[in-house]
Image (cartoon, rainbow, N blue to C red; front, side, top):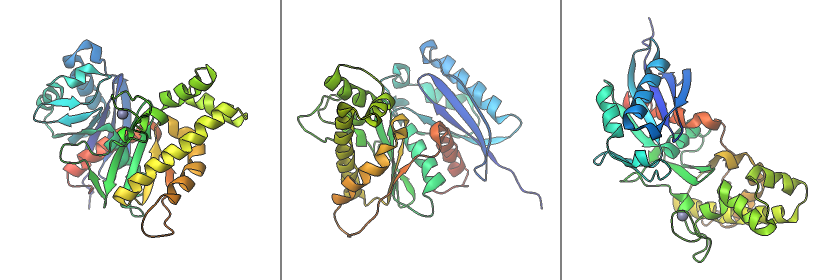
Amino acid sequence: MTRIERYAVGVDLGGTKVEACLVDETRSVLARKRRPSEPDKGRERVVANILELVDETAGAARIEAVGMGTPGTYHPADDIMYGAPHTPLYEEPGLVGLLRSKLDVPVIVENDANCLALAEFFAQCHGTYGTVMAVILGTGMGSGLILDNRLYRGPHGNAGEIGHMTVDIDGRLCECGRRGCGEAYLSGPSLSRRYAELTGISIPPDRVFEEYKAGDRHARRVFEESFRIMGELFADCVNVLDLEAIVLGGGVSNIPLWYDHVPPVMLKSLFGTPGRKVPLLKAVLGDSAGVLGAAYLALREMGLLEF
Ligand SMILES: [Zn+2]
């Protein structure tokens, strides 16, 4: 009997580039391509870029659905991605609507952090841990939630804003306007800023880590504070959601210190069942997670994947 092959394309729309991958019903990636998204050239150009990329990536495969990850939270009634302040065009109505009108297959849109969470969940948790939070720590701090093996987005798609949970109500001013958000301490720019406040030297987080290894006391202070902040913040999330595992992705996740130093802080602050282990796992898919998770949205639409 011949196998009926079924195909979908995942799209990861970013502020500077758009990426796509072709997958089959077994979740295997058959092609992957990227190009600039060019939001400065207007909506029509962005949509044309996406369409050409989808065509190029699909090649001869007859695709049945397209999943797309975007910054912010897509609101279908308004046709707007809310909360994408770095790319104003995406906060204007009409982009997804225009894309849908040009494609003759369903287009499923989801926040990019949720796409990453989905991909990492299937890559390293599915079958072992069903209740997982994936945190993206880079220029900002976001997360996606998988609760009881289902992607949890909340009634408005806003669930999982872990970066804007307050760790100090009189603390640092966050870009969102509140004070003391986790993101204001732990994002890449925040780590750099805290180091600069102590030393007057502005360097990226991986360089702060180099200084830490070289025994620099200021770098040590920044990281030791960060272990406590991250540990307590994650413990709050585990206490609220009864998480079984946390996945850490994004540029800041490449600093290896978190995996040894954060879990002891977190485990000490857990309520309930004693002796629990809640692993802090490093994301394994790198920057392909977003586009892969987007493709899974399409596979779910086709009835080939459950989450
Ligand atoms: Zn904030």
